[in-house]
Length: 93
Image (cartoon, rainbow, N blue to C red; front, top):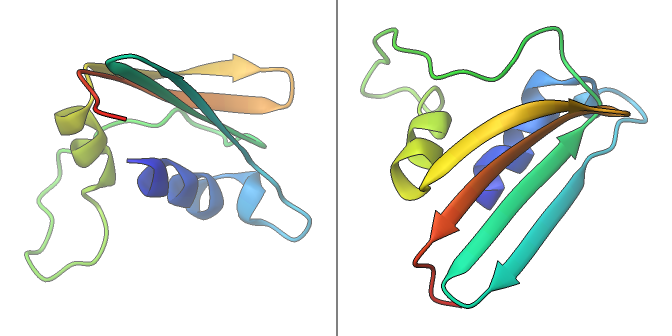
């Protein structure tokens, strides 16, 4: 999930441009991990893409993975761009 959110920041936002950056946030407590990635912004919100993905495709399933392994996930605008987060309850750390 961490890899997916970081990859999305680089692939789909200004964070992937020359000089772009993103910040990974991890909040760990007993039985819970909250993952956040703050990127430099994109023109649209992240969303699940329900279009058919070719079985041999190497991308297009990432947010489905995030959806499957997290209790909940979402995004919000922040001062520098957008923060995408996922809450994993029952995590063993």
